[in-house]
Image (cartoon, rainbow, N blue to C red; front, side, top):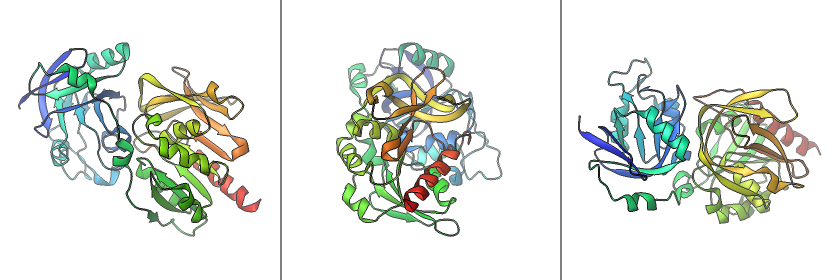
Length: 356
């Protein structure tokens, strides 16, 4: 195998071996803590612009299963401790290394991912480069920024997905980088889902007279999406609204709230979330680097969920506007399904609005 290096923007060098495409890549280095679900992680559009580090040591053991993909792979690079060369699963269609080559994504294996994760936890998320030369231009690495990624992650024209069984509701899903599991969770509950591009004017969405509006997950800094925020301002209060991840953050910004970048974000399938005023803590799947400041929305909405590890906001409810949002992923393929009931809550809101 060809020797390769992962060099962080602080100058730390990890020596390993090249996997995937024989290229170089610069990106924001983040670690994902899932013990399973590497395919769902790789194909989650919310990782656009980032180099993914898998903390679980062995990756690729069940190969490549296209039916499990969540979307297009938009990651910049991939880092693993050990890559399995001989996958074993009756559903597998190929090796993970071949998939990375097909998608022109470079990666590195054979490095101490435990040490790398400790650095990111202690010093915070930072840029890095996977390269052939251990002495790259660090100024260029430091200058990299994840930007313009929502446009890359979104569909470019409306797509309608039919419900399973009888159609009960029509949902407009605004795609900022939506995972396929969001659509699946809606269609299996009898929803016809029209997926709209991220930059669709609010008037066009309301013309279709949907029963409810869904704001999807997506990559990047929520504050970079000024046009999308303006469209959400025109949608809130018009129809029942449910936002996930980036949709949660954009809704907060549309209502005058604030977001902040986390030290190293939440990326994985084991994030504990406590329901405020409730008795339960749920284990959730998450993938984001920014959080809503709930105190910035005082008098506008109320915080409904909180991260049990760092206390960051995980959910908001805007009762007077018939809207609620969560930071975590209730659809969570490749992760826990504990919070799928939120889709049922959304359906109940649409039913109440139809009967009002």
